[in-house]
Image (cartoon, rainbow, N blue to C red; front, top):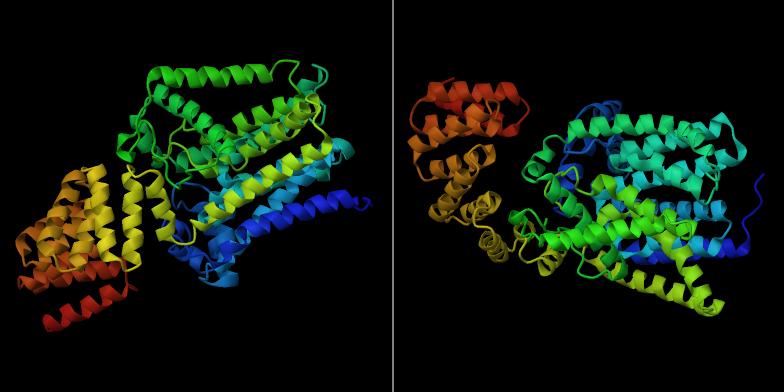
Length: 567
C-alpha cells in the first residue's frame, strides 16, 4: 500500500487545483460559440442523440470533419446524455479534465524526480498559462484535453512499470496511449516523449548499450502511433488541399516562425486570438517575412537545440526543450491542414516541456546567482499569479461568439476570416447592421472572398434587398463556381425575383454537381411549378422525397404539388 502524500505535496496540489478553478470556473456561464461548436458538437445528429451502440460504431467508423477522434466523439455524446444541449455541462467537463491533467502532470514529475517544488511550477504553467485557454474554454477542443490526459496517464503508468515491472502496468500504459491517440492524433509523438523520460528523470539511458533495449520497449507504442498517423492522413486528405499551394520551404519557414511566436507568447502572452493569419497565405491576411528573417529564426532554433544537446546542459533543460520540439511537430504545419499557420491550442502538451525546462533550469540559475530560497519561491508564485490573471482575462473573451470574434478582429483586423465570423456572430445575435459592416470589412480585406459575398447576400436577402443580394450571390458563384451552396443561394434569389428561366439553369448546374441535393431538387421543382409544368415539379419533388422521406420541407412541398396537380 502506497503511503499517504506528505503535507507539502498535498498543499501544492491543493493550490494548483484552487488556482485552476479560479481561472476557469467562469466558463460554466459561457455559450457554445459559432466557431465549429455547431459543426462538431451541437449540429451533429449522431452526437446530439447521446450515447448509443449505433453512436459508438459511428464514432469509430464514420468520417465527420477532418479529424479522426472517436474518443472525443463519445465524450460529446456523453455530454448530451447528461446535460442535453445546455453548454454549462460541457464547459464544466472541460474544466475538470484540465484540472485532472494538471494534477496528473504534477504527480508524474513529483514521482519521477522526487522534487515537488519544481514539479508544481511546471504543472502551474500547464494550469494557468493564457495560451491554454483555447483548449479549455472551447468545447470543441475537448480533444486536446482528452489526448493530453491519455498521454500523461500513459507516462505515469510507464513510470511505475519501469520501477515495478509487470505486464499489467505496461498494458495500462499502452491502453492510455491508445486512448490519447483516439481522442486526438496529435499525441503520436508519445513514443519519443517516453524515450525522453528515459533520459531524464528516469536515468535509463546512462549506458549506450541500454538504448537498443529502450527502443525495443517502445515498439508497441510506435506501432500504435503509425496506425493512428496513417488513418489521420487518410481522413485529412481533403483538408490538406489548402496546403497544396504552399511549397516545402514555405511550410518549413512557417514551422520555424511559429516556434518563435510560441516562445514569444510564452514569455509575454498578449494579443492572443482564436485565428492567426498564415504568413504564406495572403487570403488570411498573412504577410510573408523576408527570407533572411526566416533563415535567422531557423538558425536560432538550431542553435538552441545544439546547446541543449551539449553535455554541460542540465538534463531537465535538455529534455524540456526537446519535448517542446517533438510534441509540437504534428502541429508545426510541415504537413499543412487547413489555413491555420499556428494556434494557441497547439501548445497544450508541448508546453509541458517548456515548463520542465523553466522549472528546473530556472531554479539552477537562481541558485547559481545565490538568490535566497524565499525570493525564489516568491518569484515562482508571482509568475504563476501573473499567468492566472492573464488567463482569466483571456478566458472571458470566450463568453460568446461576439466577444470571441471582436477580440480576434481587434488583434488581427486584416484577417477576413475573423471579420466573416464576427459578422455571422452579429447576425445570430440579431445585430444586422453590425453584421453587414463586418462582412463588408471582410470584403475590403479580401475582395475575392466568396464566403463573405455569400453571407452578405443572405443577410441582404433576409432584409428584402433582393437586387443587391443578387449582385453578391453572383459574385460568390463567379469566385466559387462549383460551390453548391452558392449556386443554391443564387437560384433562390432569382426565383424570388421571378427570373424563373435563369433560376432553372442555375438549379440544373447545382444538380449536376450534387444530384441528391434536396434543396436544389425542391427549388427546381418550385421553378417548374411556377412555370406551369406540374408534372416535372411533381417528379422532382418525389425524387427529393426518395432521398429524404422524413424531411418536413419535402413532405409539405410534395403535398402542395400533388394537390396542385390534382393528385
